[in-house]
Image 1 (spheres, rainbow, N blue to C red):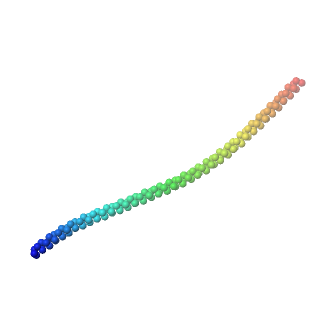
Image 2 (image 1 turned 90 degrees about the vertical axis):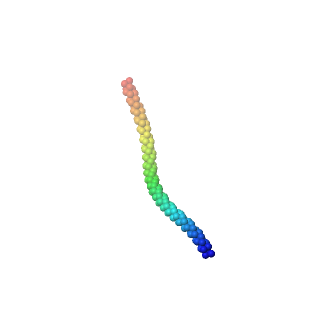
Image 3 (image 1 turned 180 degrees about the horizontal axis):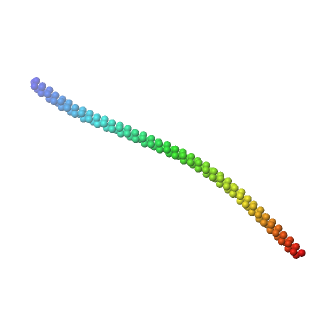
Length: 139
């Protein structure tokens, strides 16, 4: 009876040892999976950090580019303002020149009319002198 009990205990211990070995190997497999998951998580965290740094770097680059474009736009606006002022001055000068040209034309026309009247007067006087000479010669 003791022998049967002992054999039964040994069989139970063997079953427990086998179960303990199975549980130990499951524990080791789970620890390995946990370690791998931890490593994968660490890799993902590092990747996310690198990605965030790259995004921030690109963001800064774009912000600098936008600032450059804003400055360039300001310079273009200033140049446009200067060009507009110059154009306004040129247009005013053109109007002034056109006005002066109109006045000069009027003066030329007036002078031509005066010259025409004077030439007509001189022609009448010359005709009158000829007529007077011819009349004297006939007498």
